[in-house]
Length: 153
Image (cartoon, rainbow, N blue to C red; front, side, top):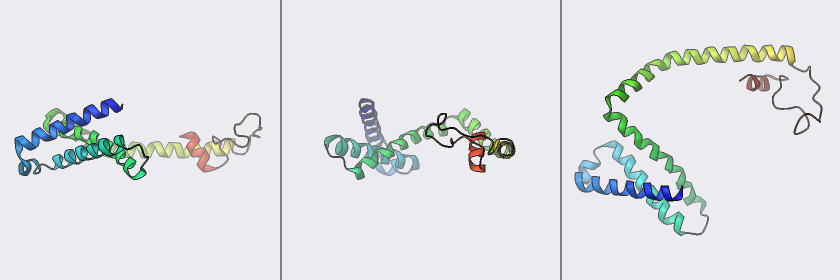
């Protein structure tokens, strides 16, 4: 993983350099996605120089590794150029309204079955210390609504 991280960081550095040389800084920073690319490259360079060279565990600098996830957002640039992906994304966005109603229906069924489980099974079992780890009442029970809802989910 460390080797792949270093390889991709160098690829991103080369891409940034080529784009800055080819487009020039003014034209490069006119595109908003290039700000993200530049930030990812700068944070990757900071991570490579500070974290890999220092033997100390600087928690402030170790938190920079969280920004690695922004590399995934670079894929979003590809979506702008591919017409078929734009069609798929627009269909997904339009179908979100229907999905919300389907999710609400699912939550209603879970709510009903959690209440039904509480009515039928709630408080009817004597949990023996031999059968549960740790001893006591297991997390998956129907004795209260929170546990019943999570158990049904």
